[in-house]
Length: 233
Image (tube, rainbow, N blue to C red):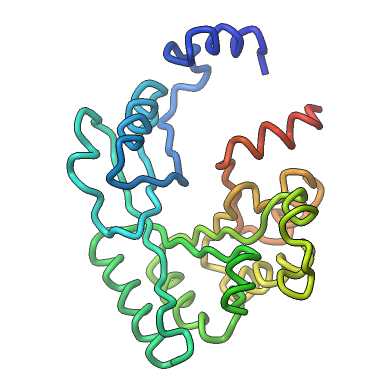
């Protein structure tokens, strides 16, 4: 990284981005937006930095039109599953299969699976749970992508997830992901936030080597700067 370039951009409050070395479309595959004033700033930044497409994770199926004002790029909405009737397996599966079909019909390309330790503590549900199998299979057969948040940084396990019986260890977060990758070879999975493990690049490389259908995103930039900045080489 050219730190002088970054310093000059910072001096202008990042309102004059440095020239890009790669003339290719830029797709931000993991961002969040809602009908709030801050979202306009997001779209302004996307336009300024040449982002062509935003995949917006939102509980709203259609992003409000006013959020698109003044921005010519593409917005794709990535819906969540619904867990309201998790205790009723038939209803849970049926509702989410319908949700996937609605997403396909609406032209959506990504489904978000939020399976953090906090989610597990609240639901005791893992990504490889049998109740999710028909839903994952439907996503796979539709040719959609699964964006999966499966773990968090080491420091969270040191400070937030200290109750191992409730949250499990960090190492215990990954078997659920690998089992899904093995069962659904045609399902393309994007592991959010560098799979929650930017501290251990050897582990990420091993995951990528074992699973050709696995991809990583670099979202949650604060994590990436903090952790990767410690191992610049």
